[in-house]
Amino acid sequence: MDTSTPVTVVRRDGYQFDIDFGLGTPGWISDEPPPLGQSAGPSPKHLLLAAVANCLCASLTFALSKFKQEPGRLSATAHATVGRNAANRLRIQHIQVDLRLERPGAAYEHLDRILGQFEEFCTVSMSVREGIPIDVRVIDADGQVLKG
Image (cartoon, rainbow, N blue to C red; front, side, top):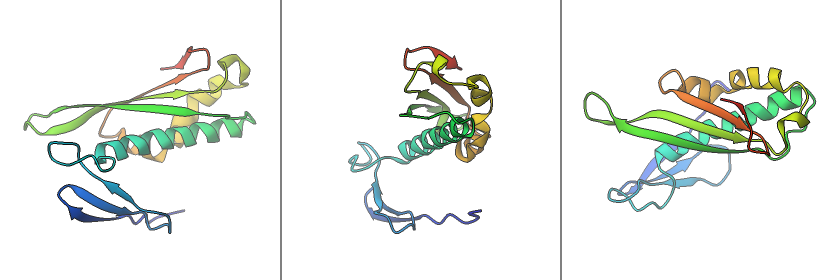
């Protein structure tokens, strides 16, 4: 089990930061959108949304595979609602994630059981959910909402 996940963030200039994931892979640049930054890379909010959506996709892939179902092409879109808290500070108040399956829901066996448990496998979303509400929908290839 990975008990330490080092990520190093170093300021470049303005609101731009170099991010080294410590994996021997290329790093990223993060930046705030104007007027603070120049949108030279994803903002911290976008990185959080990507982490939540990616983890949910991986968890759904795991759950489908556990029941010997081919995950196929999964996609996710994550949206954040940002607003001000009681101290008038900007905060992410809600995250909505829509996961899309490649095939119609009827093409998957044991889908009720899969959809009933896959979120529990997601380390990131379950951790974030303790402080930020996250709603998850699963939509099949026909546009039918299967969960959420």
